[in-house]
Image (cartoon, rainbow, N blue to C red; front, side):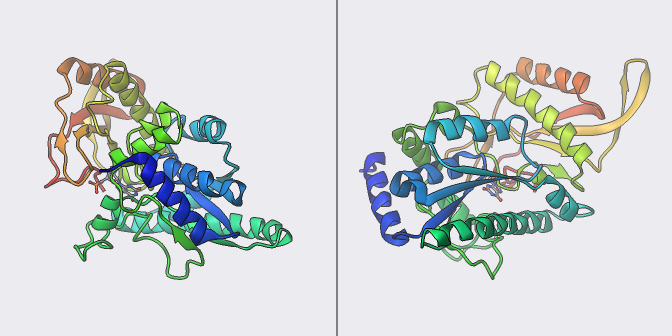
Length: 326
Ligand code: XMP
């Protein structure tokens, strides 16, 4: 029978064996997978681990604070934050193809880590141990969908699996590779992480970069961040966090439609709400969110977010739609 305590004990032993006295850095993304995998590795090897959080400018409102403040407080993990917004947005300028966005974001992630690695190497050398390992919060569904599990077709190159460059000079530690999301949450709870982190809905590594259909720009990110924060707050206030697996909020940046707001005609962008129910993200159904909740979200977004004059609901299951739009 599956038991979180047993999995933790096994993984701790496996991690210690794999790592020895070497030093490890961890890809902390703000999501539950990397939060739990990092906490697990920290449990195994303590301060041999340094967690790195890359602020790529594609985060949701409040996410950086949640990592820097709440996560560090609950785990005691040593954390380095990298400010990389300008670098990421520079590389994403002019790019509209979803796979290309994913590859760029995945590649720049690794570059950011390698930069931090250089800084840490000197320190590690002084202590006599090199940094050889990188922690990744890869789950079983990521492995399967990236074609790494059973030879299935590559549906999307999840950046934590398929987007890694060939010349990566870390060995990976992926303690969640055999697990589904609910199992990861159970492990997080067993490790004593706060509910706000463990219960957090999934958020893709490429962040808001794959929730803007069209080119990713700072202005568009600001628009999407506001709309996303409104939708999340309303869904939480309506008590729907347990019903909804996740609710991507998507900006159709290349689409405009005519509206009327205040005294005048507008020509703005639609926001798509994509609430889904799922067990493991492999399949999903669209969540029947009550109309009054949808109405509140729509009113608030169109009243408060500049350049958005329409809110639409995605009523597609997976398959045929994926959960994310890109
Ligand atoms: P899709 O859109 O493929 O998403 O139905 C399935 C689940 O995976 C998340 N997702 C990602 N997670 N890196 C991640 O860590 C990625 O590149 C990525 N792409 C999608 C998505 O939010 C959903 O939970």
